[in-house]
Image 1 (cartoon, rainbow, N blue to C red):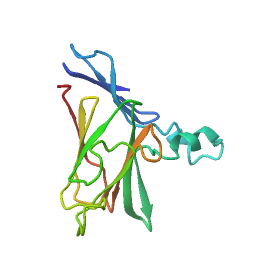
Image 2: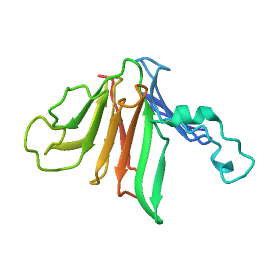
Image 3: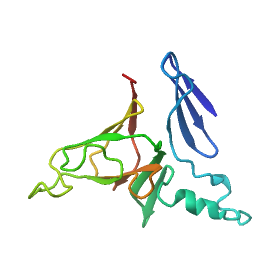
Length: 178
């Protein structure tokens, strides 16, 4: 694993299985886990081998929160996605103008500019690919492609970000507990 430490954060980049873990440092909740990407728990270097036995727990764990990856169709990148864990008491706010509850937890949020004919739709003119968590961090998704955010709607413990027609996922993790 690779460790990156600042005065405010400790970041652990786990290589196998791939996972990002972010912990608070300093005076504000030292050692408290702030963010963690969802791990596939699948031995990636062995997937092509025939001796890998599929573990049924993978289906349960991954059913609504896929780890970092790219879906390809006909050799072209068609979607890039990543998921992270949601704490039982964590709330997510943002994504721009919406005519739905402010807390996005439990919602499917689609970010794509489109004509809005009323305020009873989830469509919006002012989509912003940024959200803030009640845990003190924000995540900016740097893309102009359509984004789907499944904020604990299929699984109450996972948030998945899916970007269509994209080659790579470019995100910025922003932290500030106050």
